[in-house]
Length: 139
Image (cartoon, rainbow, N blue to C red):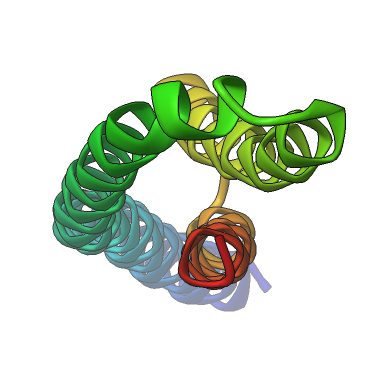
C-alpha cells in the first residue's frame, strides 16, 4: 500500500509540473501575440496617418490656390451691383464650407481618430473643395 501511494504521489507531482510548464509557455505565447498585435497595429496606423497628412496638405494647398483666385476677382464683383455682390458671396460661402471641412480633417488627425473616420472626412472635404471650385468657375 505504501509503495502505491508513493507511485501515485510521483505521477501526480509529475503531471502538475508538466501542466504548469504548459501553462507558462502558453502564457508567454499569448503575451507575445498581444504585443505583436499592438506593435503592428501602431505601425499600420502611423503609415495610414502619414498618408492622410499628405492628403491634408494637398487639400490645404488646393484651398489656398482657390482662395487666391477668389480674392483676385473680389474687387470686380464688389464694384458691381448688389446682385453681383450676392453672387460672389454665395460662391465664397462654398469656399468657407470647404475650409471648414479641411479643418475638420485636421482636427480628426490631431485627435487620433480611427483611419476610416479620417478617410471619410477627407472625402467630404474633397467634395466641398470641388463644389467651391465649381462655384468659382461659374463666377
